[in-house]
Length: 137
Image (cartoon, rainbow, N blue to C red; front, side, top):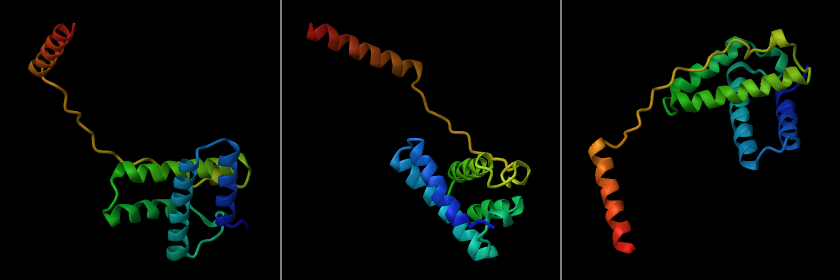
């Protein structure tokens, strides 16, 4: 049985070896430790072999229930867990078919609408730039 905390430390070492930026490593470590805290507090799980897809889904539901984070933020945590578990498969800590992230999907995110300039606003901007350019020549 392998402790999750040890694997998080190993993951961080692998990230350093791959030349990841310090900020990225801090963020992924934070996300993984937050997930580990949930696993220990809710299920008393400390070993990687005991983690199931159900535990991952419960963690996602927990994050949603807090109502603090948007779907895009929770999806970032899901992505971190996916990278972590895929790394465990690559390092042969777990079998590919026992990867609890294998079938976990991202949450649906709100579509962000970017407000663009109207045709009239674009014309006004171009005219202003044209006038300044003519004046400075």
